[in-house]
Length: 274
Image 1 (cartoon, rainbow, N blue to C red):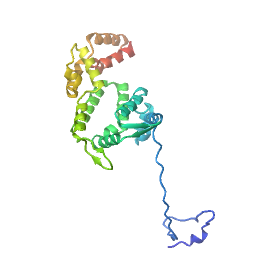
Image 2 (cartoon, one colour):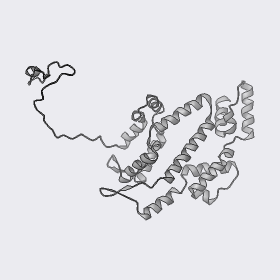
Image 3 (cartoon, rainbow, N blue to C red):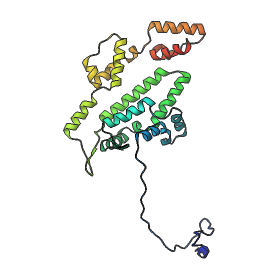
Image 4 (cartoon, rainbow, N blue to C red):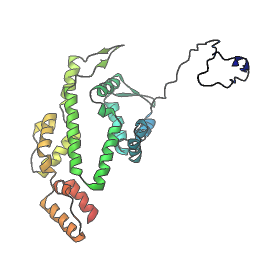
């Protein structure tokens, strides 16, 4: 059916007559207009920090969004600013005036991570970890949580090591890295991170061991040392356990089992109960 309501259209006011679902109308004309969408404003360090703190708005799951809101997004006030500086130093973002812009190198890295290990670019990963930490706070299990996180990180590392290298955008197309840049990347990738070296050093100190040059300079050697010594190095001393048991006896409470195998956990328990 063709409506006869065309005569009721008021051109000056732009008002339409009442139409019903399924009712056909007569098309009298089509006009094509050429327009452009406006891109979002470029980040500044200030607006990027704000979005890192409000990262929950990029998560669709309501529970995870609420979790990120409660913990103030991703990172901490100390690590967020440091992360931006590291991204600038590693040429993943450039700075023009106050504006930040992802470089070709940055775009390539994100595209590669999205393809080979999307968990690393998914904001909800942080929310999931925070949810697990809430459970630890309520019912213990810190050692199990740390073990699961360590296993997950090891799996990610294996995925990244086995994946083909990222493609670096060239002039209008993607081109593979040169041999020299690949060799440089491989050399850099084999070095342990500062956090790994610091953790290995703490373990060695607790176990009265001397770190070899390989552990300090080779990623795989450092990881093997940590894996082999973490359990022993994180085990509470006999004095810690005895002190905690005395507190537990005096207060008539039980010492959590996970605290008996984790020095940090038992220290936290002692601080909370002494």
